[in-house]
Structures are given as structure tokens and as C-alpha cells.
Image (cartoon, rainbow, N blue to C red; front, side, top):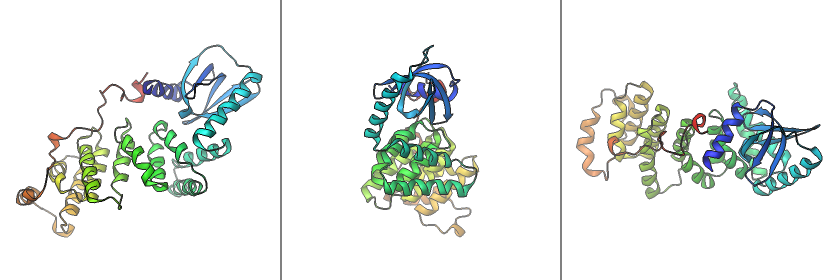
Length: 306
């Protein structure tokens, strides 16, 4: 099923040319007509003089054919589909379209507009429950949009967002993995046991194939005060990537409460050797399993998942 969904995303992203098609939805229904792309997460189905819009996350697959569709038949089917979607997400078509418009604003070139879009989504989420809709859409949004939606989910309801973020730590998009790790480490209500378990997960981000994920993991480990991750952070501080170096050194300073003004030239290996006996289960990079492996079946990048 996951490969079918990813395949549908590829088709929607790259092959919407206005040809006649049959849309097969995840709820088992289907519609026939000409498919047109609206934006990265919305398509339109043109049937005769009628035009209906759907979110890509609603669609399981597209079958190309010569069927033009019959509006008299499609209209009631679309109505039933719309009702089913409202039952699943709790949102009317108008509310879903409003959410989509705000999501589009999350990638504006203007920082002020991006902030305004995020505030608008959070405000809307306080009025109606948009969480199920955003949760369903997040995995299928483009790389510049899905991390922002994850942030909105976290700000709306951290408790409900945790399972979503946990799943995203193994997502094919490095931007999603990085955002998920960083957001989960901001949970100030987590107890010591939960923080220890989270640190073990986040430490696996230190061996991620993406430098951005490794940087997010280092920041997260620093926020968690994860002393057991010191060996992994020391190794990261030796990286040739200056951003990763800086993130790891800053994390080490936070974990061991070293004044940044005194940290220049710090011998972290000596500090670790002097203190490792008080740390339970230190995490070495060579013992960590990456959260994401591109070669694993079912986790192929979008452009390969056909």
C-alpha cells in the first residue's frame, strides 16, 4: 500500500498533463475525468463543465485511460466522497480549502508571511479540529512544506503529535526527519525516563546520511542533556562540516555545563575519560543504527517508488 501511495504522489507531482484518468481514492471510491494539477498537494478533476478539487493525500492511485467522465454520474459520487472525507477529517470542503491555502503560505519567500500562515493555522486549529487533516496530509507534502506542517501539529497538540513525529523520524525526506527530532526534544514535560529513551532514539540521527539530520540530532541531544551521547558528539565535533562541528560543540557545552567563553580549545576526550564512569550506556557512533536507510524496501525515495 505504501508503495502505491508513493507512486500516486509521483504521478501527481510529475505527470498531470490534463489527460483523461480515473482517480482511485483511499476510501474505495473512484471518479473519472481529466486530471489537472493545481499545486503540489491539490489536483482538480474536470468532468464536462464541472470541476472538483481533491488533496493528493486522499488519492491511492491514478489510472490513465480515455474516459472523459459523465458529470451527471460523477457529481453524486463526488458528493459521497466529500461526505466521507468530512466524516474522516471532521472538516467541510470550505474548511479543507482554507487549510490548504494556509499550508501554501508556509513556503512564502517572506518570513512574515510564513509566520502569518502558521499563526492562521494554529488559530483555525483552536476553532475547529484540523489535526486529523494535517496529520493525513503531512507525509505527502513537498520537502519545503511538510516540516512546517509538523511544527503546526506540535504547537497544536504535542501529545497527539508525538506518534506522528515518531513515524517521521524514518521518513524518506531528510527535512521531515530533522524537524521531527528537533521538535520532540523541546518537550519540557517529559520525565527523566522518557528523556533517556528519547535520547537513545535521537542519537541514531547522529549517523543519518543527511548532515541536516545529524545537526538536528546534535541540537536535540544538547537540549536533552544526554551525557551518554558524548562519544557520538565528540566524533561529530571532528567533522569537516563546520555546521555539524558547531552544533556538536554547542551540545557538549550544554550537556557538561561548560561556559562557552571557556570552551575554546577544550579537550573533550579528556573530559569524557574523566567522567565516563558515571554515565550509563554511553552511545558510540559505530553502535548506532541509522533511522533511515535508502536501500531498505518500502523506504525508496519518491522518484524511485514507482
